Length: 215
Ligand SMILES: [Zn+2]
Image (cartoon, rainbow, N blue to C red; front, side):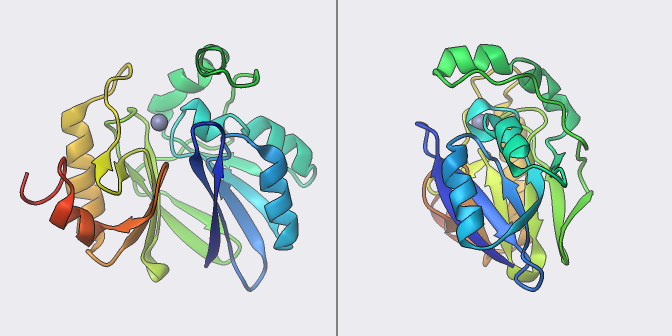
């Protein structure tokens, strides 16, 4: 699997473009905005986007989804994720846009909601889906086991964890998601968070002041 990270929107959200190098079939994870920049990266790498994958329903992660799907044209890219409990966030995109000063975007309904244990294919690649509530109730993570890479949205950051002060945020659930779903994947897993630099689960177990082993 190849990938690149493209920080998008004024909230500098890590949109990840990943692809199967054999077929150049690709997925865009969390296309929050800056659709021109995403399209430029797709073109520069000669990719065919077949999936738009969403970790959770916050505007900086999903705001560019409809525009990107429209501009990619046919065949239509399939929108997959998040887990169904984030439907209320996707239904409030208009309010989220107003609140965070994003360009207006219509309500979004994914082609496929994802559940814990589901898999998502991109070309010849298979990603595993983990349901990781806490930051939002329907938050999911995408795991590529062969390359030991996890895309974790706003669950875990290098040196920090996701906010839980939004509606239906749950600090206990968030810590459980990190410790019982993510860390068991292995210390050598690299993760791409929704904001900021990448890290490894081992480094966060050692030093994360909110979710590390010493807390
Ligand atoms: Zn978020």
